Image 1 (cartoon, rainbow, N blue to C red):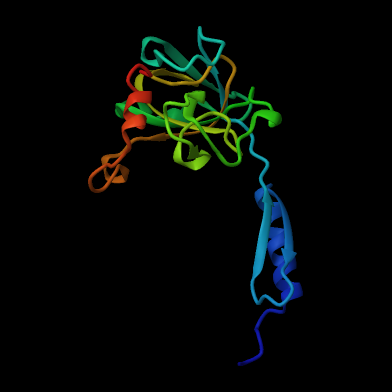
Image 2 (image 1 turned 180 degrees about the horizontal axis):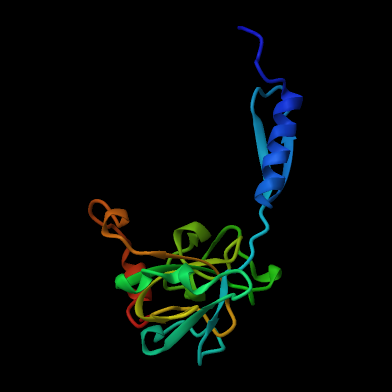
Length: 193
C-alpha cells in the first residue's frame, strides 16, 4: 500500500470545516482497529415553514377532509422559492412530529395503533408518529400556491407542525415494480384519508 495523500488528521479537519460550512452539527469518532471512520451524527435542521390547519390534535383518520396550508418562513425565503410548484398536482412534505415526547418514542416492535389484533411489527415496518427521529412524510394534493403559502389536501399534520422540506411528486421518482404490503397495512389505511 502506498502512503495516503491526506493524513487522517487533515481529513478530519477538512470534514469539520465542511460540516461547519454546511451548518450541521456532527460528532465524529474513530473505531479502534478500523480503517474507516464511523459517524455519530446529530443534524440541526431548521424548519422551512409551518402547517396551518383547523386540526390541532393528532387524530388518526379522515385527513383528506381537511384543507391545510404550509406557510414558508418569510425570514428565510422569498416568494420565488415556490415558483413553478403550482404546475405539479402533488407534493411530498417532510415534517416533524414535534409534539411526540421522547418518552413515547418506540425503538423496537409494537402493535400498530396499539391494536393487538394486528401483528407486532418493528417501528420501521410501520408509519406511526412515535418514530426515533419523529419525522413524518406525506404525499398531498396541491390546491394552490400564493406567495409563501401552499394550500394542500391530505396532509396528516396538525396546526403549527414544523415543515422541513417540500418536494414535487414526479412520476419518474415514484415506485418501480409491484407494491407488496400485508393485510393489516391495508386495513389501517381504510379510513385514514
